Image 1 (cartoon, rainbow, N blue to C red):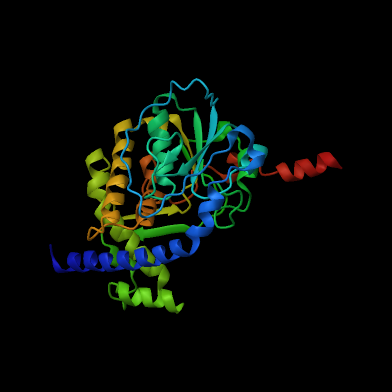
Image 2: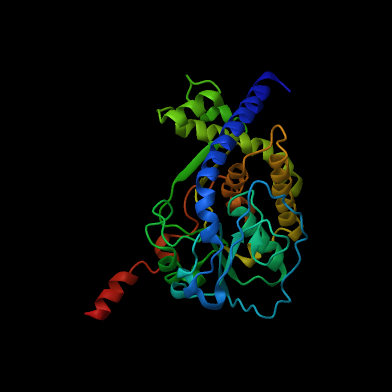
Length: 343
């Protein structure tokens, strides 16, 4: 290993340690309030209520087989399905406002519970588990999204407004959900290209101090560096053996991990690939729990998938714009039409 690579990997370990410490502090502050609330079913959800099991850092993560649920005769997806994945969020609003069938995947470490996914990669674990469970009976188009109803970060409209105004027959193989977003570009093959000329590879100790003190530093550049570095290390393990080719020079995509994808694009890759991704997430979670040196923070795994979903489902790694015009994908004049109809 040459000197630059040692520097990148060494800094990554320090930064991961810092972020784990900050995440644990946040967890300790919020877990007591979340635990009781998340175990209580919502009274207005009817039969669709899920009782969320809240994992704690002390509980072991249990590996379990991912079996097909296509024989589940209670499920009839139709042509279009919404799959949301998250944790500790109230999803009861969906029963009143979403006009198509949907599944909610909650984060849990309970063994082999339907429609749950293990902690370790943000929403990616839920998306992957759905694909693995329903691979052979997928609907024609699936929308993967977060369970919150509205997020200005991701879209100018609510999730239900977007879902209820989609031109489903215009959805291409892959399309981003949001009408606005944070487009993110990063060098992968040489992550140091993400840094300004005068800045050295960031010291995680200094970075943590800036975070704790709330002081300014080149946060955007530093985040792009770490993203490129994580992708560089993950690529040979997850993607190159599966026919994705060598490490890409750079990537570009609009962040959020919310998108439409067709059955054909998902099944263009074998089910074993998605199972391998789930296994990789699980192994990293075990390494984290065992305090193995170099184990990645959970959000790191989520970021890797957030920036590669489009490529996994057939788009170029450098996604330089929407795959379908916004007003083809959505009925953009719906609000005006509704207003005119009510006059």
